[in-house]
Length: 322
Image (cartoon, rainbow, N blue to C red):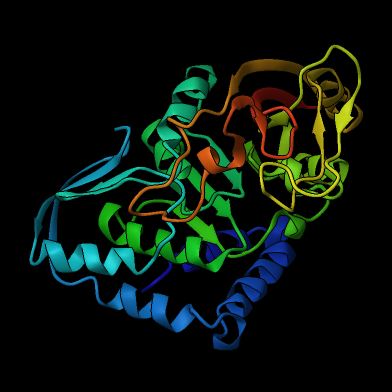
């Protein structure tokens, strides 16, 4: 079984309040994997089925590199198969003697925010989850269930592969849909994460409202996004690209971000961390061979992007719904 959606769907269908949302979620997830939707899908599925023989003896969801130890029949062939699923952006992962050195050293971000989290026995939604790296870390920190949403099929396939190694029985799910599928007043999750999503949204207010709908009353939102420095309610709207990214729309000051959250029904807004993105945290590797942050910064002045904007500065805030 490539995915473990059935258990999640059965659970959601058992409740009249979430049954109609589950039906839409199931429909969209299955349609996303129709063969005509992505020309690479057959190749990625072939890689999944070519993982070979292995025996997992130990799994660590709390290590910087989410890890499985044991025996593998052909390590070189396994690495070759895993490289068929490039680019690997979030991680890292350690699969037997294979270190997947992802573009992002996501453990550094996790280290900055995890001291501020209480995940024990919580139902968690991770919007824009990528291949599920943070979801594994959330389970390692005691979460009861983690549901990840990401519309990029490659990342969902990477998760399916990782799930083979880390445990098909674990309550961690990644679905090939975006946050627009969240229905009004869903009120299902104790904690919702949105990390690296807000600035890609043409309508950031609608994104925040959608995240609020997913939360139970009193639930917590953990939001990480690009910001700009400043004391006033200001925003940077790039003319075209920002750090070579076309789909960056909205970089607020912290003051404006807090105002937006309050207008969307959140309270108790707290800033957990503000950190610049460095070339030690985001860079090209064997597992992500395209251009990365060093190529997106002014080569003579790393405080600016190649377009002349302030270099990436990321804030993590936590807020309460209701």
